Amino acid sequence: MYPYFRVLRMAFSSLFRKRKPIDWRAEYHTSYRPLIGDLDVYPEVNNGRHFVLFDMARYELAFAIGLVKYVRKNRLAFVVGGSTIRYRKRLAPFRKIRIRTQLVGLDEKFFYFQHTTEQSGAVCSSALVRTALRKKGGTALPMEVMTALGFEANTFMEPWVQDWADWDDKRPWPEYSSTE
Image 1 (cartoon, rainbow, N blue to C red):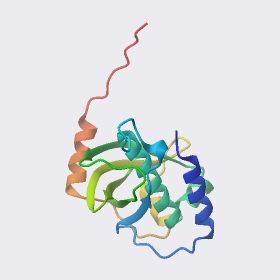
Image 2: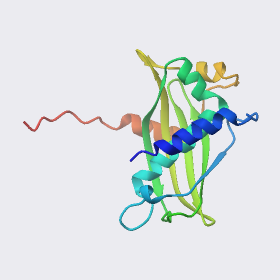
Image 3: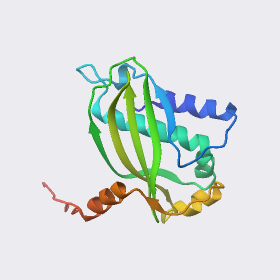
Image 4: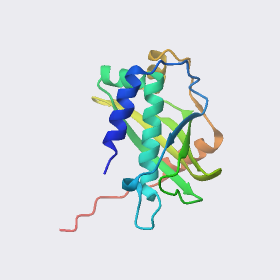
């Protein structure tokens, strides 16, 4: 189940949190405790749940820089356009985890985020997530969004992120196959 209560708590607390200026290129840190709903049968954080926790970390950052307000005002929607993840260690339940989130690329269409989970002094997983903001009839341009938020931004891409984006763009898209 999606963690609606965590999102509501995050949204509510953001109403009363005094905003500090944020360097949008710096790492942003969030912390969570994996709860029973985050676990699989082993018991550890389910591999798919890592992505939900990364969503939460991006929402935290979006609230912190005023992006959620901009999204609501302009009737946009957060979407994920692609992702890849590497796992190294299990995330144990009920122990605090830290998620480091950093914007590592920005192009004509997408925002690229690197997320890293840490628990008990070890890196447990790392993901690259390509996101966009959808609007009616297309995609909001990242440069326009960043400018509207008051940030000076130019397109940039870490070389390894560019390699991944090129690889992902070359991957053939499967054809629909009806089983009827």
